[in-house]
Length: 401
Ligand SMILES: Cc1ncc(COP(=O)(O)O)c(C=O)c1O
Image 1 (cartoon, rainbow, N blue to C red):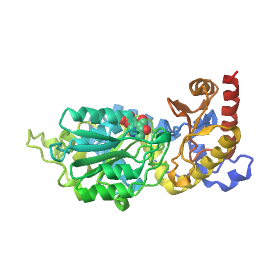
Image 2 (cartoon, rainbow, N blue to C red):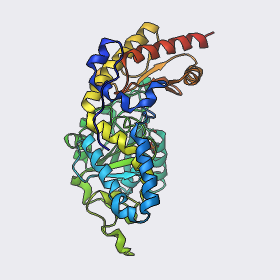
Image 3 (cartoon, helix red, strand yellow):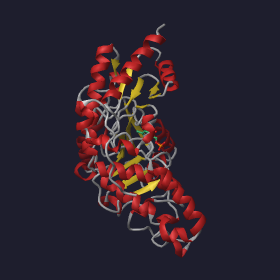
Image 4 (cartoon, protein in one colour):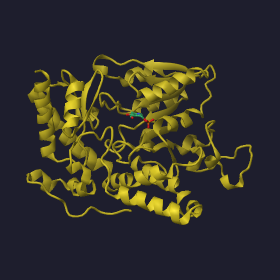
């Protein structure tokens, strides 16, 4: 599956001849059909996905039950290795799941929320799906501490640090906020958590693939992310990193036969957990989703997140310059180190503006309370950056009547 991109399809501007990441553009043919500024929500589909899914159907038809032994059983572990490389993790430390919510549920099932250490510290700006999950844990003895945001929905690291103490069992926070694209500085938070004897669980969905992260350097205990957005993997895959430093003492209550050391012994228990990444798996993995996700994951791994970030910072800065010129209210952070891969601008009637642009093949989204979210990615041309902002301005003008 691994391959290098072919010759670049160069555009006319000077940027395209110096932007080596555009060499990958031909692996994502769908980006030619629209202005694709939606990678924070759904990354573009790699060309190889069709072949990968065709192969899946052929394998199922031709090899039937033998496919498990020949390919499918090892696939989740192989995918975990690709993901581990992307986040600076130790080999064998990443398991795959159907989505981030379930990956987090597995992680949280390792925690006993018994007083005096029964607190889960999160923030008001975490993704609603995981907030609902935390709310559910309150019925199981967890005390949820939701750190509030300030003006502009900004979350302050100092507030999170101050919320952590000896009553904290786990700190579960996003590293890049989905609404505003604010990047949180995780170092003081993981430091404080360790000192207080609490675990950390980072929702890095809006980070991995666009902002570099090094789980080891940051001392993160657990991290969850998924396939759909910056990794261009399509729907169906979440993943969970668990640091080998805490692995031994964590026993997931949400578990299954794929987590057993010898699943094909069909041993009725007690549970004997696998010593590697399968330890956090549950039941039968979603093979077609993994195969659809593989080309995107491998592409991002081959490019490397550092050059993607460099380009993202350049292009998002260019978008911000246009936003200023057009008088849009900038919601995402202006400061480069604070800004994720998405630019968020609030405009009047953002929902109507978004709907009109989608109908005209300009792919973006809007979120209540913050406005329009737009994201370039490694396959984006500078002229598209200019064009998308112009299209937004035109549509804002039209919506204003
Ligand atoms: C930060 C973040 N976490 C979690 C999710 C949802 O995760 P899932 O649907 O895989 O559970 C999203 C977006 O869909 C997100 O942006």
